[in-house]
Length: 516
Image 1 (spheres, rainbow, N blue to C red):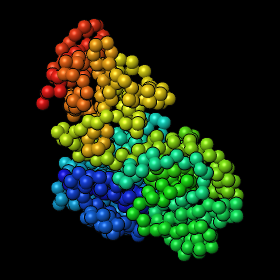
Image 2 (cartoon, rainbow, N blue to C red):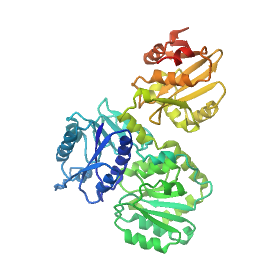
Image 3 (cartoon, rainbow, N blue to C red):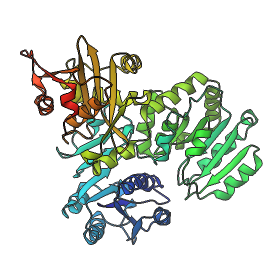
Image 4 (cartoon, one colour):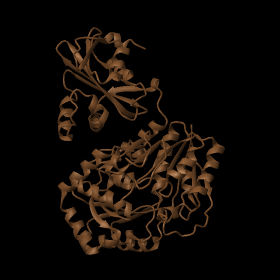
């Protein structure tokens, strides 16, 4: 499969669009995809970094654009008109015969997407703003909102797949291995990470280091990271040299090691938010751009971050007081740490890669459920379609689910298994002993629904059961759910004791596990 990424970095727009596209590109390359980037030659572009990852780059020339009071500011970031950009991108797509295009650019909208899709390629649009229409096959927005689907209700075509929320955050693959690494706040704060993004035109980094140089914060070890496009390196270096216990870092392949070592982070909104959540690192966050404000307010209201407000409103005295209060609040730090880890598991990139490059059914595997599957089970249980098909269709509160899962995992007479596609959990099947048989409950992630994997999930799970082949398996299915009824019939289950609302099926274990 050949995939083209259209994303830019610059001194004005920062590096986040390219960095998260790189994370997805690497996940797709690991599955065998061939990758090419199309970027414009802005000051601060990351073409060399992309090449260092082993990916080809087509670098488009900058073109003069007449300022327009009517056009959104983001349109000026393209470096050409949208139509010219589309034609230039199409040239690469056609020459390379691409199967997918991934576009991550605030300045490009449905007009660009329509023209690019005319080549016959599929298109994934990565967005954060929900402020413009799309004509794409899928939209990914990794940001946290109470009702994310409502944001795109009138912005996408009916068949567009929506992957919304931090569950799909595009993180480097190393972050998944550090998920649930620690519980912050237990031993107090003694190491602080300062990072405000790839670009820092206002030298917020210097402002923060100056505050942390005060005597009241002298006990803290600081790790200060400068992004690749930082324009005030000498000023920051001078501040760092004057403060004991301060280390300066730059050109790092990843922040994961510094995030794991730290007890608190101070930084901006954006992609680093989800990285901090994944490793359980609580944070004080400043919004650097208008599009970050709504997200920061939502996260603060949910107790996920300490929000210091907009960069333009930042006051040194007030910020220092806010920081002192947080350092004296270990319970608050622990809450942020737990909630962040519960929201982001580091597998979002793998999930989107599975959507774009589906695993073949013969490569699926099934393993016993683990404690860290709890949130996947919660997501599957509360999925709209799964709830509608459940015998009890009421939504399940998180606290109730936590108690249920902790009690069910490893309980005598219950066997829980997770279906994996390329190491990503994509469904569950549970067998509960009752009377003289086992009752089956299963659910597939919406990521893989419609692929015909329901039967394979049940069959693989049944093969793990440490029970004799004459064990009776039973299942109840709503009559309004013909798809699940068809799954059981194909597995050789026969209908037994059905009523007006429910179909009841049964079959011996041996008949299921010996199917091919």
